[in-house]
Image (tube, rainbow, N blue to C red; front, side, top):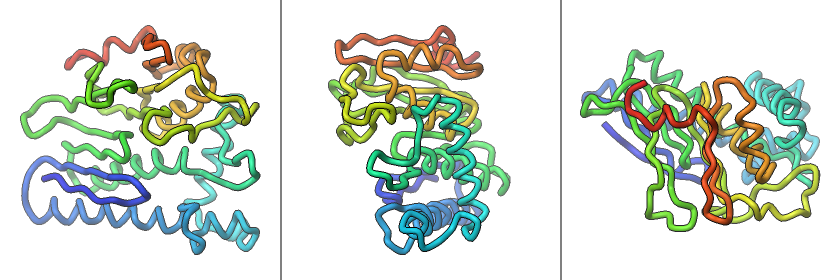
Length: 251
């Protein structure tokens, strides 16, 4: 059973293999969770907790445990990426969306697993968590789009339970920046796809690697259990040394 909703300003698609009221209920629970995350973390909602923190009306100590956890994750991400991932924008305002999306997908997938389902995928704006097999009994597959012609799939990968995320400028325009030099245009790379043990980590690292420009793929190469696929503005694709194994349906 598959369903989709527009939440957090993006399409969220969830499929749980099978039929029945229990699956329908699990789908609705997952969508309700994303809605709750949006209410707390949306920078577009004046009433959200993150907006109130940004305006100084709510302290982090007074916020929810989830909010404090996300801030801790963001701090660790900033340290690991040497500042290339930062939830504070150049204008000084907070924007944790670069880590909240992957974290929310991961949490929703954990809720579905806890309800006893083993075969499912959760796709929020192209960042994906999956488990088990699809309705045909095959491993879930994910297509990487050609950023120069989005109707074309340049690679098909099989995450096999790992998270996968893509960052780029070809859909939403220039929304990612280099925190070390915000005025410098990121015009060397068109997209970076990352496969990592969790979709939250894949999401964060894809954002950071894109902000690094051409050096991003080398950064990903140096990380354990992380693989990447970069397409630059010359239409040249570069992949990390272990990425190829995810292009096969079986390990």
